[in-house]
Length: 242
Image (cartoon, rainbow, N blue to C red; front, side, top):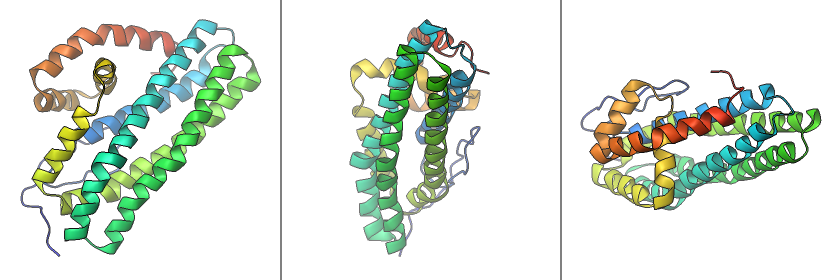
């Protein structure tokens, strides 16, 4: 078995991240997405606990914001299942082991277990907005906590096992092809939100890397969408800590 690693590139190490997969391939985009998913779930958990029951407008904003979170996470997982993991599976077939192949299969299997939890959270937020009460708030808290636990375990698995596997078996050409395919998979109408969302509360090193990787147009788009994104965040997470 051969490996593709020739040069180690410095990788991001963001708050909440469980492992840094050293190697020649730049995992900046993946680590930034993971940071945003963890950040969001912490904010939703805090908002669910602290938002007054009678703040109907805030609960409605949380319903809308949950929809954005859910669609972004769904797109991320779909892109992995359809564009990333098949290429990784091919690289493993050529340069990896049967144990490596099992880890790739586990990624999509874990995605299947996450989807129902996302829907359950959406239903709980909707029920709270429609019929605000302590019982519905408690249901939101339980659903968000459950998803947070399962998603964090999945991200930990990906960061500690699968991303090091990517560094070991994928060629730069394979990796670049995947990155470009995922970039093309976003709908034009979603790109503005995703840019504002990904960079929200991201440490400066992460921002600098994203700007350097994505080019000047990405920086300009962020300047255009940032204020609108932040206003909406302030409404939805008005009572959340941090």
